Length: 104
Image (cartoon, rainbow, N blue to C red):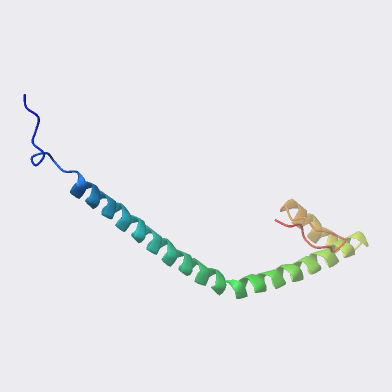
């Protein structure tokens, strides 16, 4: 058995080069896709700013109404007591002191 001559053996340079280029291309494409998705998500979040502000104002107004209703119920108003009881049955907790709602 004779050793193969230097010119007849398979050279790994071309397959390794192709594999490296494929990995580089895949990584570049994935990076481009992620950056595009990131910018889309930023636009969506920025577009929701007005709705979030409106919902915060509505939540504060509803909390004030619920607090005033709870105070009326505590003062003996029967209709307010019915409303507070109905809200309790549905799992709504009213803070009678009117403080800020608990953070989520």
